[in-house]
Image 1 (cartoon, rainbow, N blue to C red):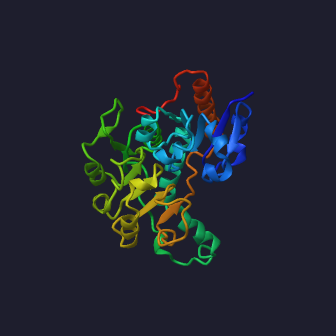
Image 2 (cartoon, one colour; image 1 turned 180 degrees about the horizontal axis):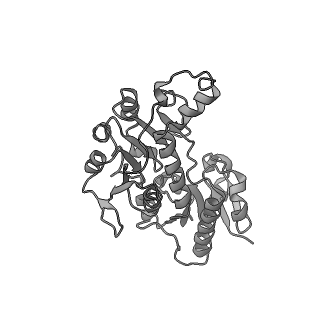
Image 3 (tube, rainbow, N blue to C red; image 1 turned 120 degrees about the horizontal axis):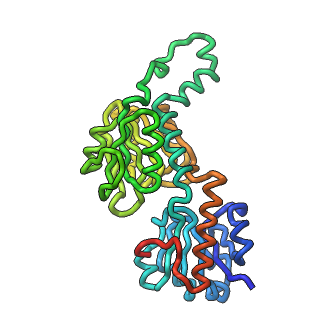
Length: 317
């Protein structure tokens, strides 16, 4: 009989199909598990699957007294209370690097769309303004990529892949992270120094207390009126109110965002701005990335139920 696994976050059923071939899935459909399953059913749960950004604290863990493994679908695990999990001897796993290439691709896509004003250009054609030869100040020539200074905040798997892609555009690449890495890019001692140097700031750092609102009004001001910010990490890394203000008063030139302070992101002041390109957190949403993430989930669950160490365990989790 297959082992039971609680599906905590809301996932499309297609993403759980391969995992469901190996395990009996108890799908809470994104609702609190105690609203969907009885106390007896939850008492038997030993492992669960969650999206890394979904809040998961000790109170929820206590609903499953036999819970021993929390497996995140994706690289992130910022929603999981690691301290609470450790106190309850619950191991935490994730899918490190599984979607790195896909996320790096969307980062570069957002950068090009923002710096070359692709949405404005698209509307210029669709509206008939181009055919009518109607002048548009937004269609003035913009700086290209050769020689552009691109700063990357975070040099993990995703950051490295972004850097490699950006370097192919003949751009200068710099970075800031908690430690220096053996990479052929210029290292900066602080985020402020990186922002002051660059004209594009790519955010590829893991979310946490130390990175919460790290990109604030001061950092955006240092980026300057010709600068752009691209975020494919977590919405919490940017002070979103400060970003709206900077985009509105042209403290910076534009932005490309795949993540937000609250998701899903409803129309508001940010979505009304013409100098920002938005996507609905689809950085890791490719067929190849999902297969790779599912492989990690299956490997972590299989190891746990076999009494082995998780092959993709979270350090400290």
